Amino acid sequence: MLRLVQVSDTHLSPTHGYFAQNWAAFRAAMREAPPDLLVHSGDIAFNAPVVPADLAFGAAQLRGLGLDWLAIPGNHDTGEAPAFSRLNQPVNAARIAAWRAHVGPNWWCRDVGEWRLVGLDTSLMASGLPEEAEQEAFLRAALAGRGERPVMLFIHMPPFDDDVENPAPTTAVVPFAARMRLLAACKAGGVQVIACGHLHVYRQVEWQGIQVVWAPPTAMVDVRRWQERLGYFPRPGYLEWILEGREARHVLVQPPRMFVVDMTGWTALSGGTVTTLPPLES
Image 1 (spheres, rainbow, N blue to C red):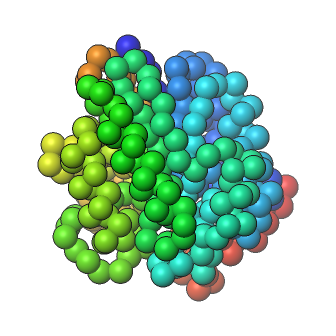
Image 2: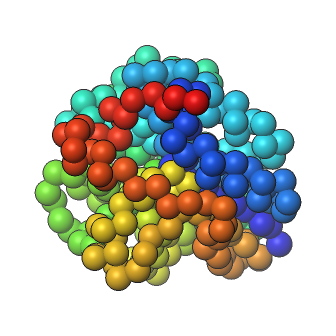
């Protein structure tokens, strides 16, 4: 049996430490019960495309946990596909290089127990960059070489929301054309779990026999949006995955010392985004 923790959307920064208390609660939980492996499913940093020091800080925080860990980029780490850039922070060579310098590869594969774990960079999907084709070739090879292993895929953006076939432009989920290629590869390649983040809420759905699980953030939540849509009060937390044989199950963990931080009041009044918050004075 392998115990894997998935944490997501931590949004760490040395200057914008709005979510430092929740990160401290997570750090305490990891000290109390260290997992066999930690996977960060993106948005380590608060605003790394503009402030690379945020990414360096976040990576140092992960290393400081003293755990075996892997991570994939989120849009607040390396930017967004240029045609789908809500924050006007398109992914580019410099931002990819910063990730690789501070964190490591932006796609990877590791075998643990009877499972193959694969991590991909959703910022590259529909980007048109050379790395997009390289990553797709990597995924094909990783799935083709899995043998009999089931696959757990980690991505930042969910592959879809409610409608897999919705071709509308989006910054919430993987863009349509890239999505359909990804899902076709997953269906043919033994993927049993897609573990993602990005939308700052816990949710689980099933598609074609594949579990699709959205991890909650440790950072901010949009209480009204998700309470109205999903019918429950969203809270920060993380996921604990148990991989036992060829089976995978998860538990939602919401530590009582993780507090609900909702920034929608700021963004509504300022007309900006969370990334336009001022530095947090001590």
